[in-house]
Image 1: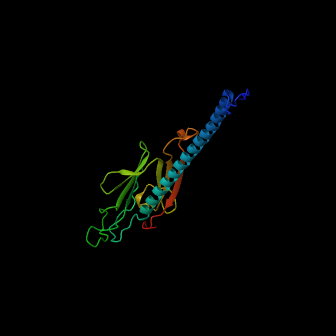
Image 2: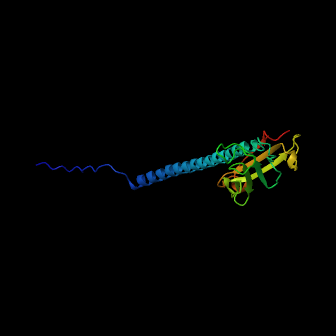
Length: 204
């Protein structure tokens, strides 16, 4: 019988120092991954907010512009005043339809979407819209400014209703949340649109 005095080989493993080094490296890599993800996430959120802000301003301007262009439509020659001067709100009137079965213009602005008013509420940062005798309803959110100027046929600002021929509308939208890294405007980024609109039915 032969006895071997050679020591038995233990399976290879990691020493405590090796484990600590591996954990430290893993922590560094994980921290870098998390930091990169956070930066990319913030960038994505900022881009998403700016895109939403831009779309809000453009959609609001598009709809207001289309309705302003119809101001003064008066096929029955009833003497409808398409746009009356008002410094605090924009009111648009047009005889687009009637209340009868044929739904033809009827000489008044009492039917739906014939008497439209837009007004800015700075406390809620909204443009609100109402039709007829209804109540103002939210139309555009996250609006920092909504202004309009009435112009005469020479392109000069006027306060006389009979002289109104064009309207210059300015809409400034802002992001829904502030960006701590954006230095101005309390962190809110803004996007401004200006449009000069000529209603087709206001005589020159």
